[in-house]
Length: 495
Image 1 (cartoon, helix red, strand yellow):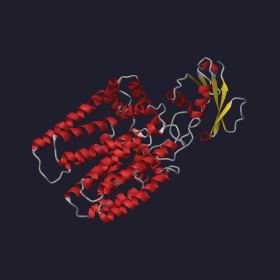
Image 2: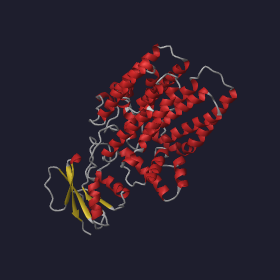
Image 3: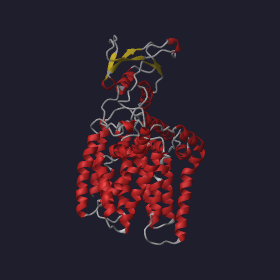
Image 4: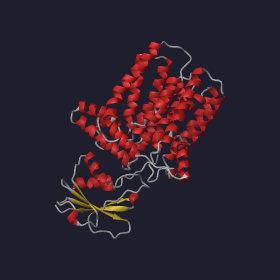
């Protein structure tokens, strides 16, 4: 009952955040939404088999298609045209709750009082998984897929059977189809769950049958995509490699994920609780069941972080699927009547307080040595809600009122990385109009361009960006965009 009440309160608070946020999507996020829109179109056109085929083995770029396919299906189910509304974005919250439920089930196998509840609450307070749950990013779904796969592996080790083996194969295949990095962040936990076995014997036939079922189902689920995409994946992996040079850069790579975990992925409060739980686990004489679950979580973290550290390409979100192991360690290590009460109070007060702070205050800045590992604009997934859609809705309303016809955009602004990493403003307007029922031809022109190089044709409206400090134009309607420090002047076209 406590878990249900907590989940309800957590969901309501996060839906409130979604309802308050109107900032247009990050560039990576918009790419996933664009793919989801294609899957949604399959269902709108009455082609579920086409949707299924592309979801299973379709070519949608560098990543598998399972995440955008499910996102498109959810988007189609809600019947909402614009993906920024809370009904559509709420899908990400379901992945967090699914991961929390799987982490609770895994911690409960330790047979320690309160372990499952502590793990459930801890996971819903992990900063990066929660932040990704508010956005359309496959790593949010991968958090859930990875936790479910580790739980399935532990169940197979407890009592091998064809059914449990098939469930594990399904979880492994689905995890890989969410994102290929499942190999680095999911398989270590799965291997630990399988090979750190309870002290009981099973028949060899049961174990062999479970292994065969796992391999067969995982191959059927993920094999077609892997076979068709192998050349592309080899090129992608080679092209995305970073070159490590000076000694400081080497240190940055070595300490990147520990620092990122403490500040962004797990947060300082849950990091301290996790370290305390690990120390308690190292010094305690626990039952074999409790020791086993605790060790699985430790191995899951250690091997995954090592593998990610060895990979040149580094982003904080790659570590998010390992964070549930911290929730399991907290649950197992701090379980017990008196200790669980103290840990639960610390989680609710400190963990929830930190999550609230990071949802209302500007994002944290990483140390300079860590920033140099990944130069460029940082991506902030846990951030304050922004009630500024960069003028998108207001401009769209003026375009609708102008009637049918092309629209000319002159000198559309860049969106600085202080706001988020994304494409120029003008490139967001076309998809926004299409998703709200206005599929328009847009003429996008630089202010000082040679007109002979621009597409010819009349337009019903001209939208001209005026940065602050430039003299105001005459006439038209003005749409101010405070976050960009300027305004759009909307003028009659030449149709």
